[in-house]
Length: 639
Image (cartoon, rainbow, N blue to C red; front, side, top):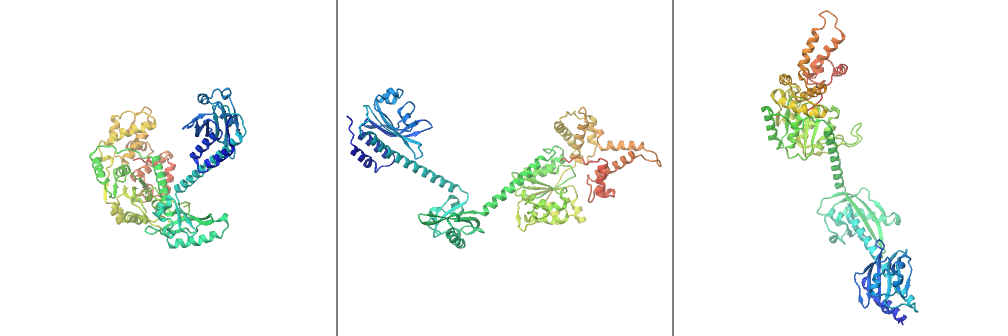
């Protein structure tokens, strides 16, 4: 006969578990449960729904503890209790009903009483059970007493779950606050510091432990505390749903011993246990503006470099072995490692940009960008904006702020190609940048400081331009620190053959054509021609030869200008004698030859001083119109 003392059972539930929590509570509960119900064992488990397993929180069996006990519920009476969320009582012969329960079989268990432990929303948290090696009939008091223990068990399990959820939420909240980029400071009703996040410690250079209990004046200074006091009074008069505000005008933070800074900030009010508290969130505007400026600068640099990659730069390297080229390369290598301003002098097409790139790539600034500006290709009205940038609304069409080329080149190199074409009115502003390293963007009164190395290039005689009054003398001497003269192709001997071979092969690959070796007549033509357009002209002639060649043979002699002059002379010999009427075809050919001769002599400069229009005595617009009518195109620019 099972001995069940109801009074003792109730005393065991109250006294045996009142002073315990957690694991010790569970141990006291199951040990007293097994004792008062006179069973061989009792256990309380938590349920893993994903794996369909029960893990024992406390398991008393046969007078000893079973630690680390975990088992799957499938094929056990526990499965029935959990799946059907009800109390299950099997008084005897349990293995007849659950023959696959090897745990009970090995322990000699024959009877079972179990119930699922449910949350308030009826989710299974765990399971409480007693088992015995004897039959367990439903004697008076068995089931009610067992249910009392189950109620006490589920109450503790719910409490522990709530505590765990609360700790998790507090930990997440703490991580959220500490991971915030903005400084967060909690203040009490007297505006004394109670808490700070990691960002606030970094901004103010103080730890929260040192500042706890200190007045906010210690962080922000007297003026800011006064402003916060007035705002706190305003918040206290608002309704509870509107006790927050964006601090108008921000705060002028003046932390003792640190640099003052302007800050954007918000202030909100809350109450805990009848006491008011304030949350101050602020951000150092200087840090934000610096980050935005860096992003804008990097974006502008990326866009510039993208455009540079898309543009055609001609040769990838400087090719040649002539003494004249070697001398220029030696001088370039000598000046590259310095910070000296370089003025590259040479005829059009001699590779001035390639030398500028070589100087930059050998300098200490090679990790920063090389920014190129073609001074002749920018309209005079836009050069200042291109150089120095502009503010939004600085002029008609300035719909957004833009960085200038000098800002993009900060800590790098700027290449001023065709610097001799700069308008006189801009030369003084360029001189200031070179001397002082500062400028003002168009439409701004803010002075920008930059650290830029300048490499300039020109095919003009700047000394003569100074005498003519079209180029400032002081700017000339500021640029002419290290003059580097590049030899024209006619002074480079056999380099023309080397360049012709390598360029023809590269162009053939780009065009998907084959190219035959240079013939003796090609070599003779290359060596006898003066190449006024230098490497650029050579490339154009080779590309034209490849396009018109059906078999890969270049036949350069037929394409060089001297050959065209001879054919023009033959055509003139066929013209009518003096006094006879010239046909329209003859007139157009004569005009075309004359315009090409003028353009070739002036390096294809159409307008301006020493341009082809001035040489011909006509306006630049008229010359451009005739060029279109006669299908005259400037040779493609290469380097």
